[in-house]
Image (cartoon, rainbow, N blue to C red; front, side, top):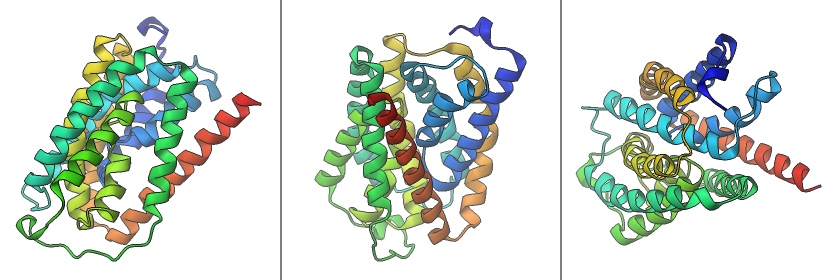
Length: 267
């Protein structure tokens, strides 16, 4: 697909996908790829437009996530919910993993990329529905966590997320909530910062291997710059339990949809 094939209706569809995904990503603290990946994969052909390949979708998503997360983090500045220690530890580990995954994905088949996405989404969905005791909000300096465990998990998430052009926040959020026991609002804000760092690695891997379509990515970026801060402001005013359920349902629905499609292709 090339920029010349982008008609006005197609541009509007891409903008709408980017806006909806980025608003939700800012609200629940994810980069948005978990939502935009299936939307970009299925909605254009469903409406009669040319379909993107899995590699193209992953490339577009990777670039867009950088901008969606940075404006989301900006909206949380001064809120007290950004945990610098978590950002440094998990950010460094996920950056290395996402670059490896993003660079290595160029040699994978379309089916493999979609299978990796389906596995990641399924794991995230299960983790989000695991019951846990709610951790009350507290100052960042009072939050404790295992540094080695956080680093190892972030590195593993980075590899898988880099393959599908995500930044891994849809896995980082349930990991931070259920494994590291980080308070919900701090998880949402901090995961956006870690996701921004991760997106640098996955985007670099995609760009170096020619998997990014310029103009569709630009359209998604513009939508992100508008919608992500609006979503972040809305998220700061919502009940944390509501935010968790919104994220859990979105991830579960996405996992079910991608696996249904994969099984249909196998039949």
